[in-house]
Picture 1 (cartoon, rainbow, N blue to C red):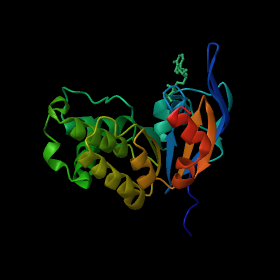
Picture 2 (tube, protein in one colour):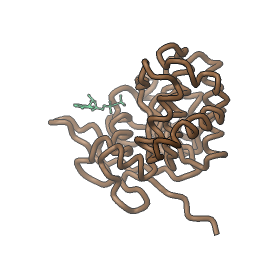
Picture 3 (cartoon, rainbow, N blue to C red):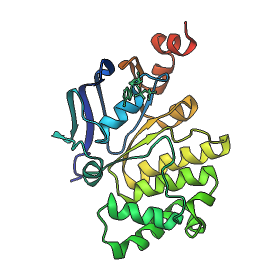
Amino acid sequence: AEPEPITLSAEAASRDFGGVRALDGVSLSVAEGEVVGLIGPNGSGKTTLLNLLSGVLAPTAGRVLLDQAPLPAVPRRAARAGVVRTFQNIRLFGELTALENVAAAAVAAGGARRRDADAIARRELAWLGAEHVAPALAADLSYGEQRMVEIVRALAARPRLLLLDEPAAGMPESETRALAALIARIREERGAGLLIVEHDVDLIVTSCDRVAALVEGRVVAHGTPEAVRTDPAVISTYLGA
Ligand code: ADP
């Protein structure tokens, strides 16, 4: 029998920063094999929720669970447990090659043995169809290539759940299409679940099974991409009505 898909979930999770409640009782889950979108205006708490769901921050109230157990609020431990994220700002080491960047993640987050790391990194870059960038310094890659290498680096950690923070930010449309194809392959070929924070509503609608919309730290709409896109609360927020 197939094992049950692993689920990552926030349950009535809140997070305060001093007197500011960035998240207020948010519940949201993503399971292996699922693609979930998270939208919301600036300051609505999307990054904070991603930080909670990836062990970067602990909730002030409520819980974050990975398969019923509390997610360790330590990113490397969360990664070893199968939850890996990318960041809005590219965090590659510019003076290392693409291969070295991916290999380092295979060891640090993926728990691979150091002597296996290069082979794993080569396999991951080949999976992306990007063997040719392996020897290039990360700083010399195009912006779109850097974003793709970041995703490959995350995949080298063998995530069961992969959280992407604005993966299409700054991308031209041709690269956004390649990104949508990559998201579909990560689900289909790796069986991972994805949670995607994104301003590009077209990418969200194309790629996601479910979407949640945050406003002022609360989920105001949650459902199919079409239902959320046409939700009155979402429309009034985005149109400022
Ligand atoms: P989004 O990602 O949707 O733009 P954030 O999660 O970054 O929203 O921020 C939500 C709210 O929490 C904002 O009011 C922001 O100023 C506040 N906030 C986020 N991180 C911190 C922090 N480390 N310290 C203080 N306030 C923060």
